[in-house]
Picture: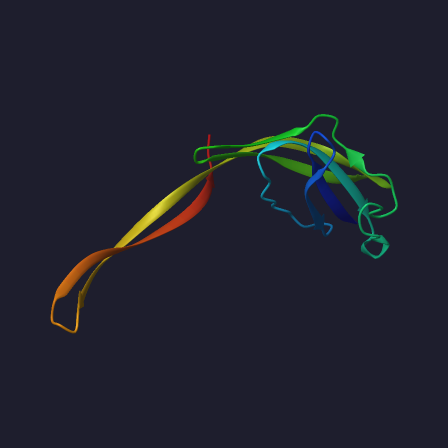
Length: 134
């Protein structure tokens, strides 16, 4: 089964949505806020687009999920979906915190102008990476 994942704000307006092929993992960058989760499932050939999705009832979490950014910390959620008869159920939900770190690399560069004057500078590169944090 495939899945449509929709996060909505407190007023019910869609914030972000994604289509997930069955058996795969979806990583979604979600804007900060408290968002309500709705998931619809069905066979890929039954997809009807929004708002009808697969033509079957969707499931929704009763409480909103919290997503925050605090400095280098990105606070989000991990959700596990499993089949339940003809439908779907959420079997696990965990808070996840990712820390964004930056590796800095500097290269010393010396260049000579056509006039013969040399100038020096540091060429810096910043490579962000994300790791789970406490």
